Length: 198
Length: 198
DNA sequence: CCTTCGTTTGACCGATCGGTAAATTAACCG
DNA sequence: CGGTTAATTTACCGATCGGTCAAACGAAGG
Image 1: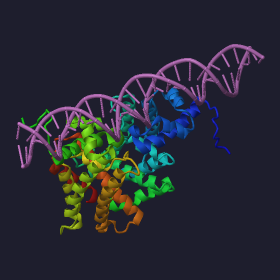
Image 2 (image 1 turned 60 degrees about the vertical axis):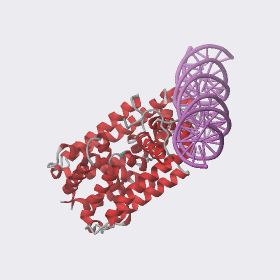
Image 3 (image 1 turned 90 degrees about the vertical axis):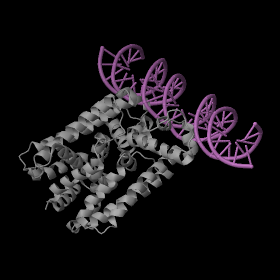
Image 4 (image 1 turned 30 degrees about the vertical axis):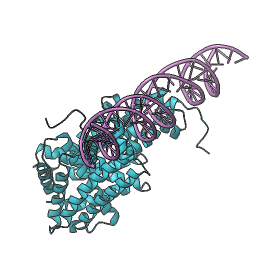
């Protein structure tokens, strides 16, 4: 077996990565308030104390979790946005990039969109930064489409939220069908988009 | 003053309604796990014990909260769906009905869409019933549009989720702009819809 | 072999939370 | 006015959770 059940000593970097994986599943499924450090530690096969030794607090763990998820997606999206694609093709390409970034990490999207996250803490700041980055990427995408140039600012802001919320809906369906590939999810979005803008 | 601060004795029905109002705000803002009975009781101006006397448990309170919110919206939506409107006009009419049903109760939508809700409890069942009802209404609405008749079943299911998720996005914007009326929100949706299907 | 240092744990603490039981208040009714 | 009943509170319990601390473990180096 490669998957060891006994507590093998690992260098800090690797252990932290495993802890962030466990944290993603717990935070993504139960939300910040509903998740517990004990459950996260148990999922990772280590003690609760180790989690606190490495991340300082539940808040710090959540901040690290959100930052990793956010930068991963934001980097992929940025690559698409700065590519020489036309505005229409860019929409589907962005979705594809998001799904590829979420493959095997679907709960990352839940972490980034957790409304039950705390307020005024370091995690709240980290989460706000990541959300803001992706929201602005989406805003630029919406603004680049001539179709929406007639909308007033508030309506365009709402439309941007709808776009991100649509991703949420697709990801939730994906979470209920974990066997599907990122490519298939992108194809589905392509078909659905086609029926909307024809 | 009509708003009394001292603890006035109220008949159970009225007190329960006030408690459900407070529960909506707390559950809607912090989620099931993040909300506390103490905070709900404090918001309603009564003791925590009274909440438990009337609703039995946090779970029972959440179930009652979700049921009230769900039936309110489902009834309004059903009225629109069973009206003699054309499929296209029905979409906007449904949105209008939802916004009217949420006016002054915007957090009801968060309660119905709380992913941090418990599992296997009575509240989970109540929540599932309400969600299922509204989801099926949305599904019927999507199925009635010829535009989407070419989509396969899974894609149509996803599109239904996207539709409800779009409502979530608009309601969240509304929660950040509480001064706006339901009518204005419906108008915004009308303009946005027009740019999508033109 | 012994020391060192990063890794890891078990035991414990204080706070908070959901929940319970008994007592208290106040309105209604004869 | 007296008594019944519903409404409401105070005090308390047990469990869980986030967090702390000192100690144990184990690989690496001299």
